[in-house]
Length: 261
Ligand code: BGC
Image (cartoon, rainbow, N blue to C red; front, side):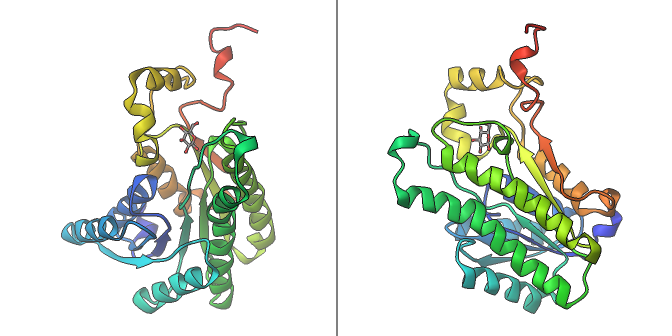
């Protein structure tokens, strides 16, 4: 637990399931005021808010499609209207649309880039604008992926978006460091989330994925949320512009694990 987080206002995009849900719940346990953003998962977001409130926390569910400029402006507006300020913004919402690269339609390409990259830009831009106007030494956390580093056939739009998130994070970190605003990313590996549920329900596929994780197991969303809490807290106060991988070692060239090469 990080005592400096108590009372802080945080927005988590795409928080109705998976890693976003775990981050929202973790922040609520840190006694933060949590905006649970959703797009399609209204019912799930409401349940998460109920859950948080039942445990004595504070949370509100707010709709926004992160790829839409007006929606993101309204998301920040509603946050400030509800909780009076904005301290931390977590750009978590993301999508995947696997397909052989030469068969990806422009529409699918745009969808993935619009949510995973433009959405992160819009969230950062609106949060930073508010923080600058109110002289808040805020904190932004972007959910990237191991695929900001590892190429991934059939996921060219996804990998390109995450590569973009990496340099977006570094650029904003550099630009706003003098204002005391930190911008970092988290790079999860294979995590037990709804986006992966189908894939990991097949025992052979699960085993194949585990074989490229030096630690040998698929991570839990809470293990990513732990990293988000640390990055949000002042314990990481001198850290900006990094991607912290929470991947069980997936980015470490696992095929070399047996000492070959
Ligand atoms: C993807 C997962 C995948 C993992 C490792 C993540 O970015 O969302 O679907 O299992 O990378 O490849």
